[in-house]
Image 1 (cartoon, rainbow, N blue to C red):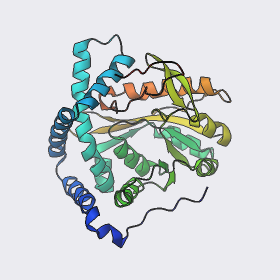
Image 2 (cartoon, rainbow, N blue to C red):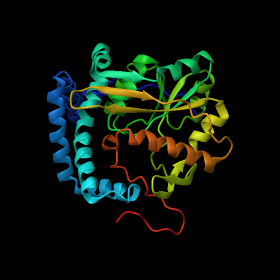
Image 3 (cartoon, rainbow, N blue to C red):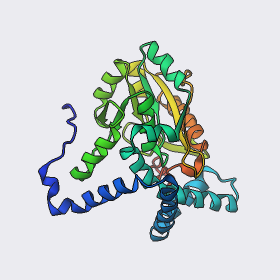
Length: 309
């Protein structure tokens, strides 16, 4: 596979068809300079509006929670959905914070716990595969992590080349580089060199390179085997973490957990189940801040019906 070429700004982006993108990025930049409490309230409003305009998304959130937590009462589930709605709106503003805030402002809002786990592995010369989850504030978590220990992100280029340029610039602002998510060889090279590589194995990526493993109360969740491939082929350590918004005051905690020392090498099914347990732990740090909008259980074993209406 050819080497990934970082996107650059082109004169073609000044064409009228990209004006909506440029306007959106400009507004996001200007809003990012507002006091946090104003952005928080705006995020709540955007989340409320989004859930009412996209009722199917709300149904997806509800169904995911029913599948994962069948013993949760309906009032508890409704309360979690309401909180998730607010965090969905706030995610847009947290992306602006991640892409445009100066370093000092990020550091003032984020406390890092467990960085000693990373420092120890780096002193040993080991590569680190960071097990991320799709929390609403993942962009801000990546920025904060990079300020403590810069790493390499796994990157999916956006179909809009103008937006892709700003997305790449924002995500690589405090980190070393980005790697195309299809460039497995590039990820392995980085890990073998002792780099930190971001990887999010918590979504349903389809049948290719996947197996079925338990996730919460769902016995067969389609789970990528890419984690096993990267860990077994590079000899790296796998380290989960979670980014948590503590309150509406704008204080966050980037919590880094100990390495997954009991990783089941050369056993794809056992490794998928093991990684899913780590994913569960990260999600439960702040379940209301997780991206439940994703149809996590859309891929079913052959012959099984869909879990979604």
